[in-house]
Length: 249
Picture (cartoon, rainbow, N blue to C red):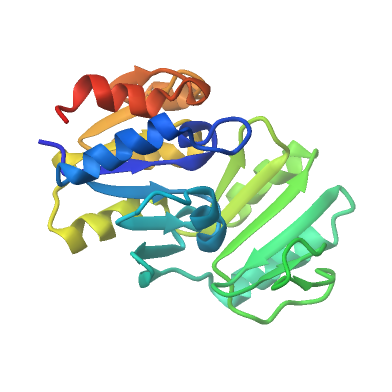
């Protein structure tokens, strides 16, 4: 029996225009009315994910790739990077001319090489950052440099975002699966009672953790290889259509 649904946003629940159809919202609402907990697991920060899921009453959220885990609006789990490690990596990124942009996030603000939100702090990453951060992201077309960082920083989780020259960086063992485990424990749910949906590298561990893993048709092959089922694409309401067909509502 499924007691929790965990879904990624980009490439999964969100369509290409970053919206969620009313059909999908209705399907998720019916799941919740039947007693199933609804969780979003995303690389996006908490408030941005809330904006994108407006109209959906989430039971929990795994934000920033697992750095922050929420039940409602209550933070129940937070992971941060060792300052020495994050400082060294940010300096390496800041001094590499092939790195196009950098961000370093803490819970309530983000250091960036550009201003995106009002709470952002524009920062020169050629200078050491001494603050404690939970997540980084950087853009570079130099894939060999980016891949070399994985070996240099085993204390960190580094993922490439498919289709972009964007890399996400988090603390070791800070993953969507770890966030999902924290929420499952909070709600008294075991992995066999969880169904998860995703499409990219950072969803793989979550899909493996869940008793039922479902990849989108638009997912990368590596993600499809670890799941039990493949549903329709994000553009065709794949999550909602799968739920309508396989969960008695």
